[in-house]
Image 1 (cartoon, rainbow, N blue to C red):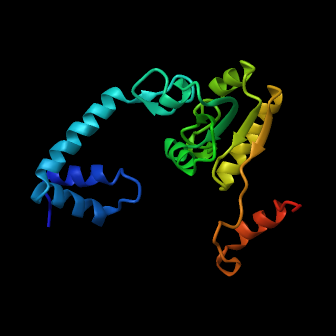
Image 2: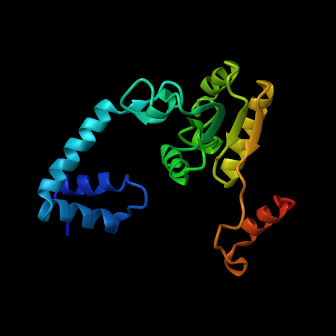
Image 3: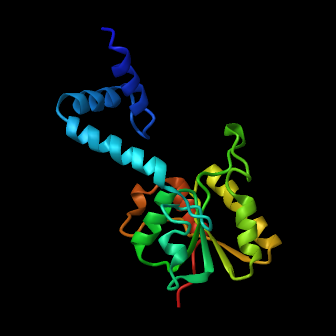
Length: 199
């Protein structure tokens, strides 16, 4: 069956969302048009307002409506610590852990030459300028433990060294409550190589 052009366009647009394939996009479109029209209108309004008002923080590149995000504007944060993450979702995850009180820098991705993502797209120049101000003493590299994330962390550690800033990498390994028999080999290898002395 051939769908109407506008419905087909809506389904195709919904596929831009992460993890949404053709069947899920079709189910979402039918739901929004069948029973969820008030919700769909609310979604249109919210998305339109966000596209107009939400931008990047001029210091850390986090998504915000102000010049500086609430974290960069806070006097309660430790300006000597700068945690580099790949996405705004990573900032939220670290903040929810409650164990970090420093500031952030959001790359909005990772190095991926095949996709045309190099240092410029990740804000390397802005990060270097931030490190050059002299207040940051430690750059915490919290990129994902993928091949691209590791390459990005290596590049950033070299940038930090050029700026005279100590770079550290977040630990990777067995999760709290995890059982060794269910942990994959790569994670277990990381955990063994990053082991720490007790006592």
